[in-house]
Image (cartoon, rainbow, N blue to C red; front, side, top):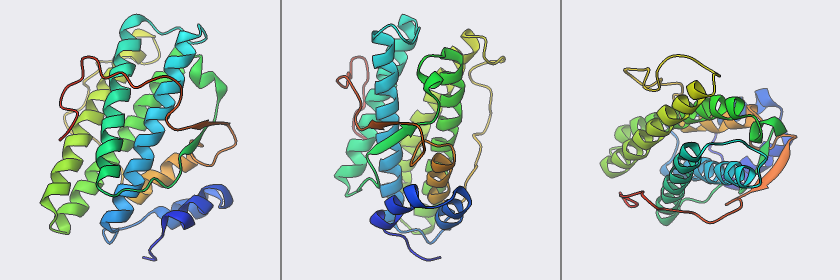
Length: 226
């Protein structure tokens, strides 16, 4: 695999076709630690930003979230920020801090938002699963443990998103509906390609920038460090 550098990847976000981007970032087990944590930090920055935009839209009265959903998203945003802080503290350099919202209805339609959030969380879970495997192959037990710690929290976020999607009538079933999370990717780079293909990085939608509006609120959130 040809190694990619952060600057090269940012250029790819805006200049490559979806198929080319996917090919370029599909990756393999030879991804370096730096590449893995850079992509992970980018995903965490995106999550913080999107959740900030959702909470701000709710506060403006444009997005009908109930108080329980607001509290859950506020806590999730604090967790994503904690992940970002740990990754950047370990030397991660986000590939971009600017993202795109491909459909404006995403921040006004509760069912659409939570079903989209489910898909995003599944991508994050799969990315950290791939990261844990790659770190284990490389003999880096500490980073493998960190990847599992973060991935487990992303799984909690997925269950929370499913709860509110069910409540909104967008899906049916139960929030905790899997015995094993999906291993969607064999590399972390594939997760970055997925975000691009979904239009959240380098897309044509409305630009949003990290960290998004509003302060990070850690009320009720513990274990802010691994």
